[in-house]
Structure formats: C-alpha cells, structure tokens
Image (cartoon, rainbow, N blue to C red; front, side, top):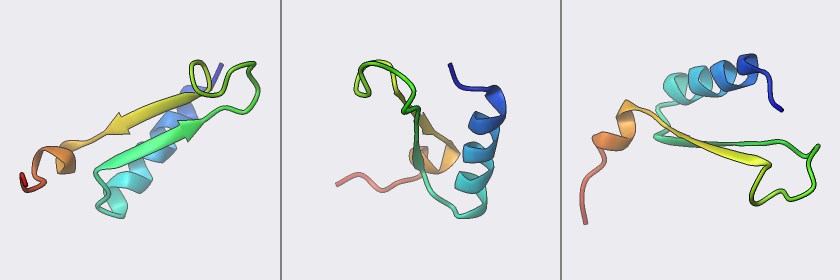
Length: 51
C-alpha cells in the first residue's frame, strides 16, 4: 500500500514540469504490473493535440 503523500508529490511534480501523465511504482508487492503501479493524468492531458 502506498501512502497518499506519494500521490500528492507525483501530482505536484507533474504540474510543475507541465507533464500530462505520471506513473507511481510500488516495488513491495508480488505482481508489479497488476498491484504495483498506478497511473495519474492531469489537466494537461486533456489539452494534448489529437493526431
């Protein structure tokens, strides 16, 4: 289980660096791909141009 402070830190860095997407990894789990990652998107993701 990840503490909410890590989510807040990731969202803050994403906003400061103008990044639309971020992934938070937890290596203290059995299956990294199902349990150990959490993806975040912010308002910059909606502003990306469509191809």
